[in-house]
Image 1 (tube, rainbow, N blue to C red):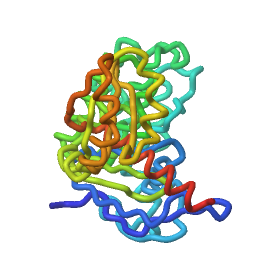
Image 2: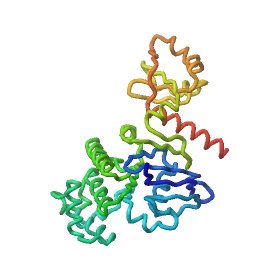
Image 3: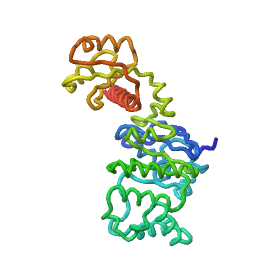
Image 4: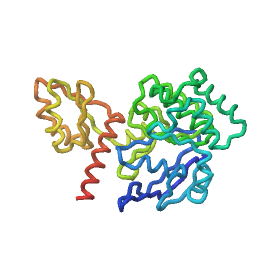
Length: 310
């Protein structure tokens, strides 16, 4: 097993608050790792430290075999980092933007590198369009092209499909899997559970700390959640009272049903017994999925954070 990323004890503080707190990450070469967590959990700060844009306050390790602290400049040249917001020049064409990035990396045979990247991302026909006139999906494709221009070995993608239509998201993920098959390692933050399910492994962080990591199946099994599905009318009025019941970790709406999750099967059944007796409601056992697990983790993390700051 070859590790593309192997760091331990990664920490970063702002104004006395630990945004990233003693984080450890190990990523195998050629794997796709989904990076999940609520807004403000430290995902973006972690990505910026891994690519050399931020210096950790503490921690050590390697990224692509290079020391995270002393060789940050070399790491930058071998990493493709895609930010949350479109960061290229909107008043330049697709080709002009890529040519500019190629100049920054001082690529030899710059025109050939741009031509190959345009072809690779199916942008050749649009190469003379202004970036500002592109739809969200095409801007995303251009941003990925700029990340791949210098042939990086590691891709760090920060919510790359936010605001993009479903087809563009699917095309994007097909490309990510093609890149991983070529040996490129990918760490991608996302809030979409269907995208998380396409990753080889997942890492969930909150308040700057890892709460769980592993494959989708491992994470669901380790959570050991008991889930009940409730169907019926006026379900919105049930969310608050059910959430206050003993043994309930989370309550969330899934279409026309509520998913109620807990860890103690007997306690959860006892708490839901009055609702099971109602003729206007139908309760049935349901398998836990990633969304159940992550909603429960988010609620636990929120309670822990409020308790720590109380």
